[in-house]
Length: 184
Image (cartoon, helix red, strand yellow):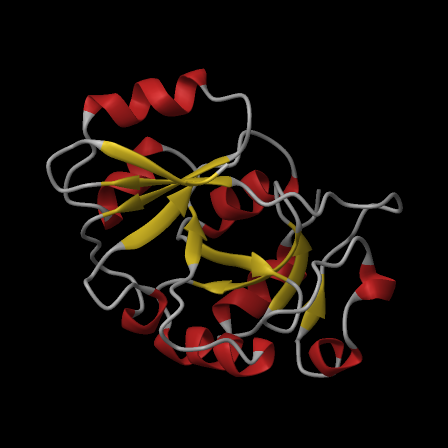
């Protein structure tokens, strides 16, 4: 699959509409403060609501999270659903993408366009639902607000069928290594 246009947009601080591994998403370079700030504006998302980033594998994750306990590997390997983990500390990520406490949510897609894109980009990609904050998650391009469509830089090839509106489950990893389910 040709990712060149998507990769060019990400390299230029752009915003991309793409099929994530969960929902139709908006994405940008998670390390680029300018791109992340623009994404917040496009979505009308409150700044105190942190974002999540996709990483390609554990090796990439370790570049952005100081410590990944073995319990996380077990949890992700056993999970059948896409699972996002909020880590207590992150590094080398746009500050506005992280929680005020320095935490950051990451997910490793199991397969598909999102995984292939983050592998090709070789940096984390912000993945947030392609809706104005508080509005329903769109099932296809026709459901995406014109306000969003008029402000993004590129629409990656999208499947013709409806896309899931079921976001990932979210698990909070506490600094003591224990976990708490935030969203099923």
